[in-house]
Amino acid sequence: MAEFDSFAAVDEAAVTRAISDHWGEGFRESIESDVLIVGGGPSGSIAAKELAERDLDVVVLERENYLGGGFWQGGYLMNTVTFRDPSQHILDELDVRYESVKDQPGLFVANAPHATAATAAAAGAAGATIHTMTEFTDVVIRDGYRVTGAVINWTPVGSLPNDPPIDPVPITADVVIDASGHDAVVAAKLAQRGALDLPLDTAATDNGPEVETDPDAEAIDRRLPGHDASTHGSMWINESEDAVVEHTDTIHDGLIVTGMAVGTVFGLPRMGPTFGAMLVSGKRAARVALRELDVDA
Ligand code: 48H
Ligand code: FE2
View 1: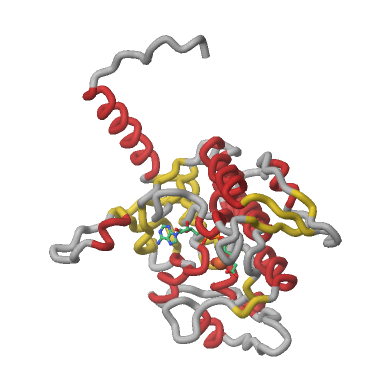
View 2: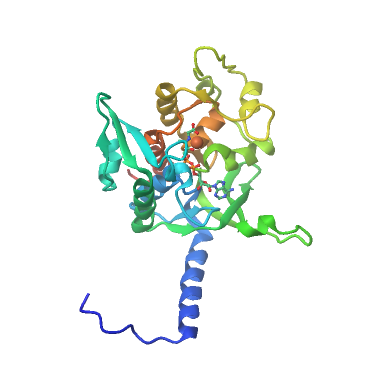
């Protein structure tokens, strides 16, 4: 920048028009995209970055006013996050500083706000269109089966009195990725509608020494949100991170699941405040999306 003298002169109307035109264009382009990612935490942000870098039209829906989800804090309100080898290589790609933990080969620490901001920035820099304060409220299902989009509303609408109701709007995509974390909101909606079928062979996952898993369909159904005994299993870091990555895949026609949502859908053990699996899973979800879209990786 040349030495500062004074700011360019603009009038107030020009500022509002610029915002409205730019936002409107981004919204219009989001109505039909290649990939729609629900949730802008670590897994969704990495998936968005990977796909937008390949020139796909990528839309991220985030109900909060900021990306990052649970990445801003490590655990117990301590803002240091951990990563296990080989996920530190993704931190290298993102230019995030990290350190090795003494006497713990393969374990790394980084500042959570720095890692979170870098991940979110990478999604934006790659060209993903990011809609914050925007809530996924339902799925669009085509031909009685395929997931083809999301029904969305402004987040604050959810806290208004529902009388009269403010209708949401649908947006569509060739592929939807559920990156909504523990709630697995897209999978949960499908399950609520009785439309979710899971690959039964992969659902029979080792869930820890004392916890038996039941490979039949009824047991899988019970693990899904909105059902009696929902969500993931208890904490087991070593098992969980690999299992989340391995289970990152298409779970229904048109729907891929990534990040902690994978743990919820498949009833996997949780990993606590270590985030490597979220980043690796996000990358894997992007590769699955490329396969679904018939795009060379
Ligand atoms: C729009 C929504 C909606 C909705 C949710 O929770 P996240 O950080 O998810 P991941 O999977 O990228 O990372 C999980 C990680 O943070 C974590 O919780 C770990 C590792 N836990 C281990 C353990 O043992 O607990 O991000 C999900 C994002 C958030 O930003 C939400 O606000 C957003 O999705 N979101 N966005 N519409 N209906 N629901
Ligand atoms: Fe969590």
